[in-house]
Figure (cartoon, rainbow, N blue to C red):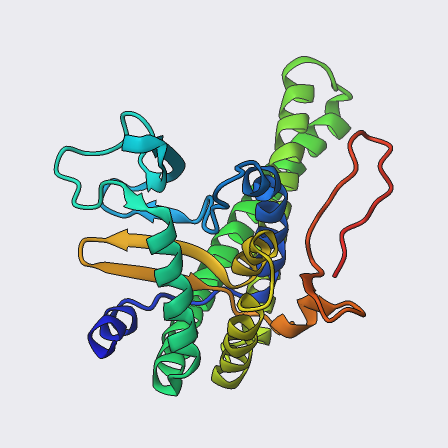
Length: 285
């Protein structure tokens, strides 16, 4: 167990912030809802999450029938995407899924690994904050230059009264460019504020991983798909190692799990949209 654990510890990636958690979790829940339920014999817990780092592609769900009619399920490269020297190939789905869940449970009990992951995540935030500040400054400079050019166009219109042809085209082009730059600047500022506001917290991560571990033992298989997406952003396969990218968010994982009067547990954040544009059903959680 210790030898397996060292692999996870050595390749822990950066943790992502709350804003990204909300956006990605909802998108994945919608996109994978049908596929998670679509197979009678196996529910793929890691749909859309598994990537081969050697071939730089996402693996898809696959199945096949062996001798005697037994069905096998695996994660595989899509046709034409696997390189000849790929060491990953196709992986049995049940084994990979069991491995990921067990590693997450082990990590929940290892404070040193959690602290190391949070430390690395926070170091990445510092670098990203510096990069965002540089990008904002560059975009502001571009915007000022465009505004200066726009002022020249406006001055020409004021002097000549000409608003057709090339002048109109220049006016519209400068205005559109400035608007696009303002949008990019706002995006960078929003990300910067989010990064400055929060940082990875080992105690919060341990709490959420522990609650995840407890809930995985009590939910049915379809609800486990949603719970996985609440914690895991990606599973990246390298030769000889597996890299996990986890979400860092302030919402307690336990708050997404509900218990009915019979004591059965279910995932409260599951998105079951009614068909059609007139649907008034809203996501829970």
